[in-house]
Length: 150
Image (tube, rainbow, N blue to C red):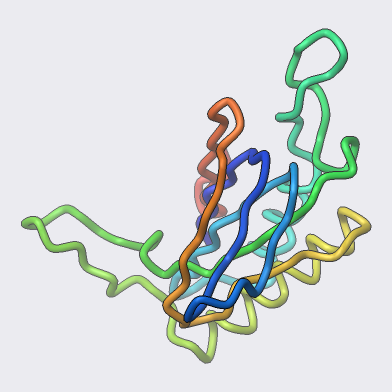
């Protein structure tokens, strides 16, 4: 699984002109599921997301987590995170998990993150044509791949 975690002032998801999810200060997490990913990947990533210290403390040092600041969480599925760009200019999505794996793992990640963070995780709609609006704060953007465990 791959995540792009963005520290935001606010973020929202709109589908067909209707806002379906919206948070204030917190984390917008883009979630990509690859073939071969497991619940262990989701567990590791949820724990990392909830505990990641990327919010400023009183001294302006990134020393607080989304839990510490009582921030919002918005997770959006995004199969394009699995893109391979090795050949040519058209990305290949052959590594992207099919719906039968991707949906349950995305949902499991969200459930685990909610449990770890002690707050609900708002979501986009899996497979929908979503418009994601955000104000990145910093900017702070972190990429995590559960296979690399960096």
